[in-house]
Amino acid sequence: MSIPINDIVTMPAFSSYYPMPPARYIGVRKHIVFFRAKIDAVNRILPDCFEPSEDGLCSVSGLTVPWSANYGEFQESYLTVKCSYNGMTGYFTPVAFLNSRSSIPAGREIYGTPKVFANIDVGMDERVMYTDTFIAKSSVLSIRSTMDKKVAMSDVPELNPSWRLKVIPKVDGKGVDVMQIIDGSKVATDVSVRISRKGDGVVEFSPSPVYDLSDFKPVEYFDAYYFEMDFTEGYGEIIHDFLK
Image 1 (tube, helix red, strand yellow):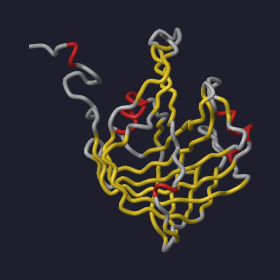
Image 2 (tube, rainbow, N blue to C red):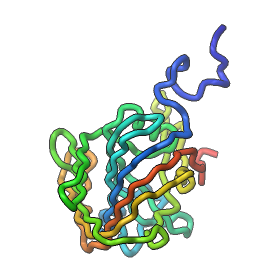
Image 3 (cartoon, rainbow, N blue to C red):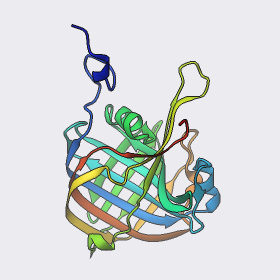
Image 4 (tube, one colour):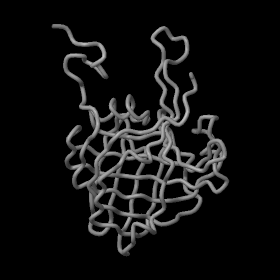
């Protein structure tokens, strides 16, 4: 008996490359550093459906996932910029770096997250957490932060709405088959935060011939945050479909 076409949601049809959500994550360790960048840098990486925020607020995140039900172990880093869409303030992620084989296509195909492969090293050196991201054996993003102060989750800035631009090109090269603005604000459920801390952080962007973020050199630093948590990753929401 052949495979019912309505049952196929990804490829290969007979054995999916990755499981569909929900995905459970256990023991995730994450740090975030907030900073201000030049508006020109933010504007350069924004699709023109978004407007850069006048304050140039950005954040970089580094995390390590020791166990996830759908993707196993992996490390990740990503940049987020404050912007607006149709008069609403939110946050857009222009690029996310991962060292995972299955999480990358899942993130791109399901959520529209612009995930690309990189070598990533996440760890602790005494009281400093670090995330180093490498492309072609050279650093493109380096994050360092401390966690010496207590902080309540209610005092941590919320990066919502959490926008992505999901784009899938047509096979004949004549435009795109999918172009949607996705909001990932409600993707995480059953969240259990075991540790939340605050400290200081620094980031460094190095030049690269691909995914170059070197113009995001911080103009001003704000707080850094550290979390240890479990959560379940579900589905996102389509905010706007440009083709319908």
